Length: 307
Image (cartoon, rainbow, N blue to C red):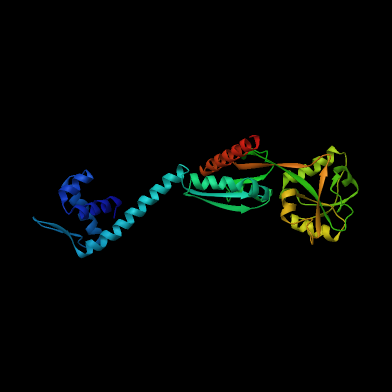
């Protein structure tokens, strides 16, 4: 059974006249009759009854017409979706993001993406920088919104217009807990808790770079993989951890009843830039469409701030 045979049969069913059906299909009547015969032979049933006066569908033909229309419509839809996906007008997009991106990048960019490209299904995955970059590498993510950017030719990146400060995280009983801010150099005499570099390379490097600028060495005595674990550790030990300011706020650090406090760092203030990162050989055209939505949203924000 061939697709063109289904189309020819549906045209015959609509016209109930071989001459008009052949004309619509740009076929000769003998060619159209031959296609119908092949279709009926493949099915083993008669679909069309005709004589010198009329052409009509058999009961089997009427039932087959309904099913054939569904098949043709589904194939047409599949072709449309494939074409739209190739052009970036449809398909799917898997985006990784961190907390600052969820607050300052995604809301407006997603709204514009939905408005401009409603047939693209966007899936969101909150992850730290390291797991996001791993997701890009293995293809489970199409776009990553992360701190910093990789320096390999495997990825491309774009800096986003948002800078994120880092803060120290201490327990309620720590001697820094009531201070509004602490010079970075005072970390010299503190036991610190730090995460593995692969979890968030840019944050890790920023912390160590700030230490180098102030000519101190950090005394890292404990490790923790995430801010939640850091908050638990500093609440029971006289340790100093690190978190982004948005993460500290989201975790309620410093509010009544919390066991940990966020303390500002200065001289220098360690900061991170947000970046959009994608594969250099990215085959998904929806990535560039989403980047356009991010860029236009940020341009509007910049105009609003300068007005």
